[in-house]
Image 1: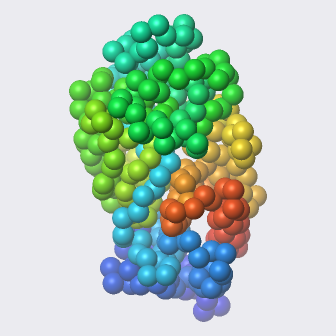
Image 2: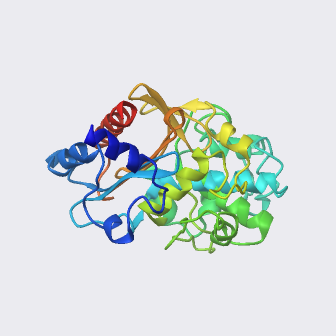
Length: 342
């Protein structure tokens, strides 16, 4: 009974005040998730895990740093930043800077089109870039290095041969989200980072630190973005709350969140559904939308439980090929089970 009462008390604590500032930075939490996180801390297979934060309904249930790491420290969230680019695109549409997902990209990026482009480049839309269905050859994986070594990343991406028709299969490519960053820069005449600061600035706790730029000064859309786990949680809470801040300000249009989580295609590698910068799959018996970055940078949102979970990891190794990503999914399933039981 004492344990149940303590859980109920903790579940009522607000997000930023779920623990005193000093306690938030420690490696221990005081919830029913403690035994699970203690087990994770001692599991050699989970050695890359740096932080875990669990929040329900805007209230922190657990916050843990592992192996000397802290939820407040900056980390490279890798491709989880693609979800942030998607949010900026949705806001730009809401502000009338962009027409919508069906808008063609060629007129916006005409200065960087090849001299004699494949006619299919005129069919690529903003939605195709968001859902990784542009059809252009992928600039991720083995092609990433030669892409970022080029003198003009936008021009190089647009000059690639077509591996499929626009709107065809999912071809996961960081170049697609970088083209979105270039588009945002063109239509707003401001840097993508400046847009993020202004448009997502009302979100309490949200902050982007270091962020790589291409040779033309365009911020890399969809990679090399530094954020803390707490900042990533703040962004996730924005989406869980229908695009509204805790004070009720509508920052991201609510219909954009619905479109972003809508099934547009499937990952060739995992089979997961993919929308506009977000993956979706069943985990722990619940539908989960998630942002995923190399090495195991995860932002999970479980709408049915009002649950937002952040996991950050060492960025040095792949998380899919070595099974580590599946361990993170399994940890989320355990968290879901524990929260649901409580």
